[in-house]
Image (cartoon, rainbow, N blue to C red):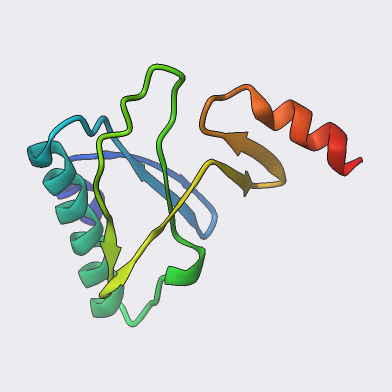
Length: 106
């Protein structure tokens, strides 16, 4: 099973998946990139496809140094976001702004 080959942390729900881990140096970034590549290869082998336009990179935490890096899926650089709607809930990179954003939308 693919989940046994992925070294990063994974959250799965229905057709949604999140791959995440601490990235504070180039080796950790490469580990995450390798796991994204494995997921893409697995999806291709099973004739499935990720919607790369919906895939994003988010640096989470108020003390996050935001180590500068790019993540690539299927040859496309993933956008870096600070807020993302996930399963109907807004998630923010500092884990504080999501509530304020939600109030503005209501």
